[in-house]
Amino acid sequence: MINNGTTAAPSASSSSNTAAQSLGLKNFFKTPEGRYKLQHDKTHPSSLLPYALAKSITQITLAHLKDQAAQSAGNLPALQPSSTYSVASSGVKYVTSKLLGSSGNGSRMLGFVGGNGAGSKANGGASKSGHVGGLSNGGSSTIGSNTSDGKGSYLIFNVGDTLYITELNSEEKDPIKSISFGNSNPVCHAFDSKAKDGHDLLIGLNSGDVYSGSLRLQLQDVGKKLVGAHHYNKDGALNNSRCTSVAWIPERDGAFVAAHADGNLYVYEKASHSLTINDFGKDGPGDSIFPVIKDQTQFSVAHARSSKSNPIARWHICQGPINAIAFSADGRHLATVGRDGYLRVFDFLNEQLICGGKSYYSALLCCAWSSDGKYILTGGEDDLVQVWSMEDRKVVAWGEGHNSWVSGVAFDSYWSSQNSDDESENAVYRFGSVGQDTQLLLWDLAMDELVVPLRRPPGGSPTYSRTQSSHWDSVVPVGTLQPAPSTKDVPKLAPLMVHRVHSEPLSGVIFSHDSILTASRDGHVKIWTRPGNSDSQVSSSDTCTPVKPVSSGFR
Image (cartoon, rainbow, N blue to C red; front, side, top):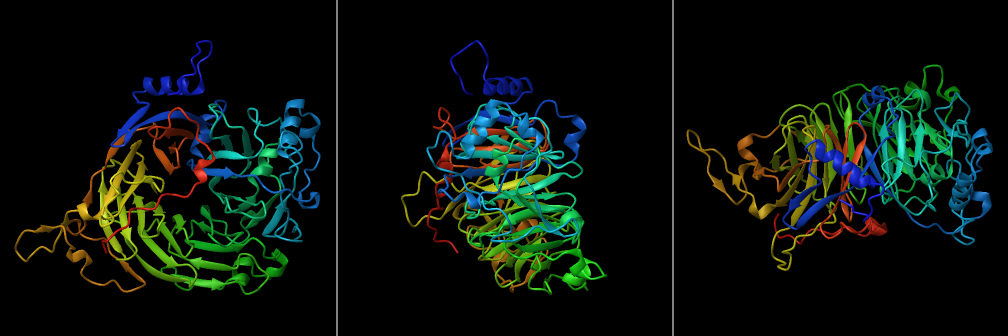
């Protein structure tokens, strides 16, 4: 808890801690390395109508904006005049000028590149990919007071039909920016800190539409509409099913993927041209760009028939919704989980299915990679956290501790073992999970400490060993989807820490350099500072290189 030493007005942190305690929630939790403390509590405006909370499940994205080199004025997308600007107060005008670099930063300017790459042009209303102009909705100024010069850390989260942006360092609970989508709801988003042309923010809607835009440009604008963005799959022209997940492709500037509820995933090149509806032919865009899917149960990849089209490829992953996707850090592999309960891992560059397998029960809802690309976490409706090994292409551990569906998983790439001097010891991975049981669980994965069950002899009882089990004896052929393993074949993990962090079901967890962020599905985000960081703000050090696990000798 943050204590500002004054009694005149309680801080936002103290107010949120008081509210949490009234609900029986503690504002700290303990781990072997020390105590994590609740520092900030972020949420949507209190004026939001309750029915809006049920429209979508809140997801969170952490964005770090850095200084950008000065660019010529010709590369700046013009902010068109609107009624919002004509009634803007002097304070809002100051914020805008500061974001543009004319105040507080000398002569430095923040540059944004408009258009779909160099020299692209917007399509008309009939196109499936277009450009959203710089006009706002003519409403009032932004929520709160945005005094940032653009550099810093921001938290992005969706509630109902609105995307909210808040400063991570600020004690203010309310967001500094809201972006309304009117008749559709944002359900997923992603940020690319390495974007070279200013377009670093992806947003997927439940209508199937996808937008890419500049986070800086949204902070600069005082309206409540998305500005300077590119519009893909406009009005569901190519796929009108819900966009369930979006992700930038690592090491491929401007390229991204969008997954949908019908089991399809599309690959987009941001710099590619776009076809209009008229170019698709009378049979419609789906039939002209990509061939008809012959077998809905089989994985298939189809490339666009025209070199000028965008998206450039369609991956049919499964029959039913894709619930989540995640790229390995090097962009080589893509993991997907779906309503059918399968994890699938692909060689993205070669467009091949490598491995995968079934959950113990029902759907998988989330997935995440370790920073070294060796392990994948999955969670779902079986209340388990599964740990997959890329080397073994199998489940190597089950985490048991949740009392309901697991809705978010993540590795803590910034944590390192305190006992890492011995180079011969096995690697230890720290990861976390959240669920609809309102709990955050932390886990340590140390392969040399797992008790692995061996094959059950006929008519006998299973024996146990710290060596490999029969679950790992056989080699899994590349491209094989495995059935759910038997409970006796998979070692079990117990959580290191269990803590009830929210009063509502949880939807996401993020690890940063200085904190852990947890989000509930109704739009509340809590920031838990790591031991030793409780008196300091979350800073730009979040962008530092994650800690690699201790060198490992295990297979």
